[in-house]
Amino acid sequence: METVEFWTIIEAARSASTADTPFVEALVDQLAVHGKDDILGYQERFDEVHDAVYRWDVWAAAYLIGGGCSDDSFMDFRAGLIALGRDWYERAAACPDRLAEHPAVIAAAEVHRDEALFYEEVNYAAGEAFKRITGDGEDFYEAWDEYSASRDSAEHDPADVGEGFDFDDPNEMRRRLPRLASLYLRDTPH
Image 1 (cartoon, rainbow, N blue to C red):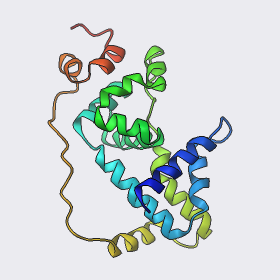
Image 2: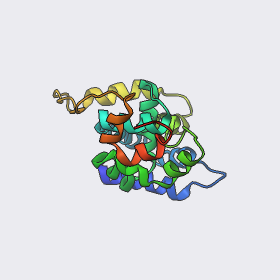
Image 3: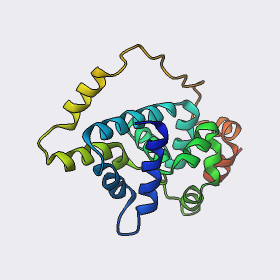
Image 4: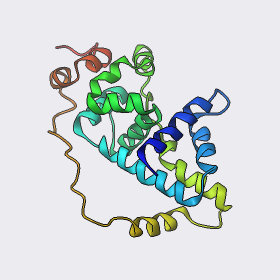
């Protein structure tokens, strides 16, 4: 699956989601109309864009928005970035501080909610769609292992995660993510 088709599926799911049909259900519905190989191709692209934002600056944004952020939570945050669609994903990838402009982030900061953009279920949408079309007869993870083994096995350089820094240092967070810090560190002295 090409990157454009991946984002087309994400956008179609975003358009199909309603109060009664959450995004992840709409995403599984979108994926389930494809064949097994397409779902595995979707997972491959998902992993690529998910891994591309495995960076300290993005993690710092998640830390501010979430009032802390474990390894597992950071996985969910990156899935949430993908669920925002290509435009917001690319904005956040280019400059995580731009998330301070997102309506859900602003609304969450105003009422001191820490769940904005964390979307665990999105990580498992391909597996759910695979299960739906195979009727539980074929294990997604076994199929994924086989699919992955058949792909280019050349060593990939690990992504540059950037410079690490102390997320608990409010001055450092204000320096690196000034707009998000102004939303989330209002009660912290300078």
